[in-house]
Image (cartoon, rainbow, N blue to C red; front, side, top):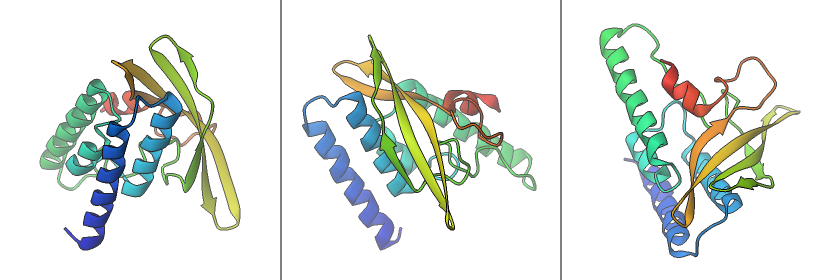
Amino acid sequence: MNARFLQTILALLLVVNAAQAASPASPKDIAAQFYRVCHKLKISGLPTVQQTKLLALYLSQDLQRLIQSAREKQAKFIKEHPDEKPPWIEGDLFSSSFEGSHGFRVGTPVVQADRAEVPIHLFYRDGKNMIRWTDTLVLTRVGKGWVVSDLLYKATWEFKPGTSLRGVLQAE
């Protein structure tokens, strides 16, 4: 591992430890923390095992299992089809844009019982052009806290990963 990667990991661990030590965070706080971590990790394709460990504080157990299952399917595909491009190998799975985003703003959550939908206003700069869209992060209450259980891709363009993160992870 290079020194820059280790610095990033240490910084993220500090954020995770601070989040764990604080009182139960609101859905808006969790969404902001989750996207800050995603942006720092610059995830392309499925999160690596190390990236998933850093995201685990924020992800539901079910979503972690789906990522692990997708990783296993991807490895099997690579073994069986070494000359073909495997599923989930590139692109941002945590936004509607394959290229990802350059920044975000967390909107006002809509909370109903143990479910919260949090609008995430994202943007991507392409030269002088600014592309903006809003996705919806779905959180589920677990104990006194909240975890990410899905992401709804809400951009209006045709070339988004699918309709939801869960759907994309279960597709192949």
